[in-house]
Amino acid sequence: MRRRRFMTWILTMVMALAVFGVSASVVFGADLAGSGTEDNPYLITSAEDFASMQEGESGIGKYYQLDGDITISQPFSGDFQGIFDGDGHTVTLAIESAATYQGMFGSLKSGAVVTDVITDGSVVVTGGKSYTGAIAASANGFENGVTIEYCRNNASLSGYKAVGGIVGSATNGVTITECVNSGAITGENMQVGGIVGNAASGVTAITDCYNTGVITGFNQVGGIIGQATKSSAYDSMTNCYSTGTCSLTTTNTGVGSLAGNKSNNGTITNSYGLDTAAASLVGGATSVTGAAMKTADEMKAADFAAALGEAFAADSKAINSGYPILAWEDIDDSGAKATVAFDVTPEDAVIKVGKKAVTDGMIDLGAGSYQYTISCEGYKTVTGTFEVTEAQAENEDVIELDPISLPSL
Image 1: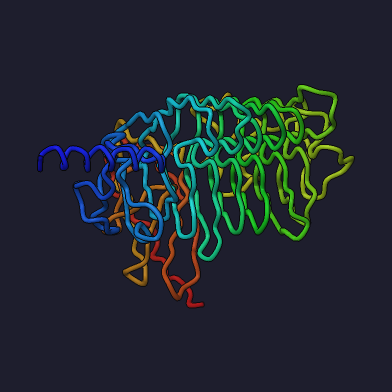
Image 2: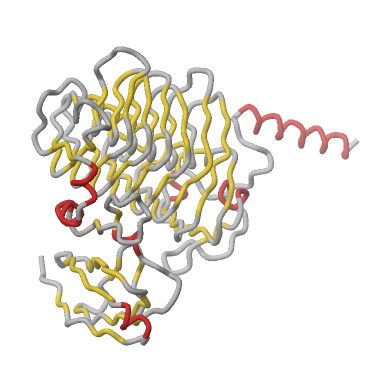
């Protein structure tokens, strides 16, 4: 009798989990290597590990790091509010669904940070369901913001509305920095973009990003943003470019090489669209302040990468068909390396070369041009560049940079 009651209780719990959309095989807070701190993050080695990360407010301030490539067939369940470091690894998306909020993360909320991850594979959403994004279907930064940085999407995505190569829908304070989309992005309806499908209420800041993927939809189709919708919002697009063809499946006019529609008070600064990608930079606009069309030859010229800013580099290794790449994409972890030494004051400053953290003031790098960022609470952030020559790498030289002192705020 006791055994029968126990089995009945187990069955009831499994059914309850199913009702609330939680897989019985997912154990939230399952044992993971690490302690969840910045210095000792929880290590993610499988889809099961990924699904077991803490959701909602219980996950605020928890650090997770990918320890290898993984494949997932469904998004992270619940709101993610922790810090997820892909450490340069790839998450292959093998998602086919007839539900809303599909991507690596279904929902990012206040305090969430996603950095240094590559997405590949495909997301196929049917049944007229909206909100599809490779990194996140939805990002809502209300209160403490959401940050997505140093990410690349190679996956193809198809959905209904609010479909974006990085984020489907961004609201209330979302910052997207140094991200790339090369995947084909398709929406049956509107708000389809290479980086963000719909930049809705609140502020969405897209900086130092580019798109090479083909973007297709019914209306409001853009290489960087599909649509910016809120009249009171002050969204920004800065130092961005797009070469991917943007097209409509109808005779609508909401298509642009940078944005399909811009109905808010946002700004576009130093951003460019390939002249053959779409007839206009912003759908329905005859002129756009802060943006310009460029030919392929102009975009492949070395001075164009320089004009985009220090986050970009010329495609000297032909990894992007000659178009500018982000400086972090040019870091070569193979072959001969020199050691670059930093002398920074204060000593507890955080040093990054591209997306890579510098440990104990030293980092090993192959030949190339690099950008560094140095930051510390209470001080102004300092950026700069340096170069490692072929000879320095081959000789495994130690390159001592000039001392750097951060100025106080």
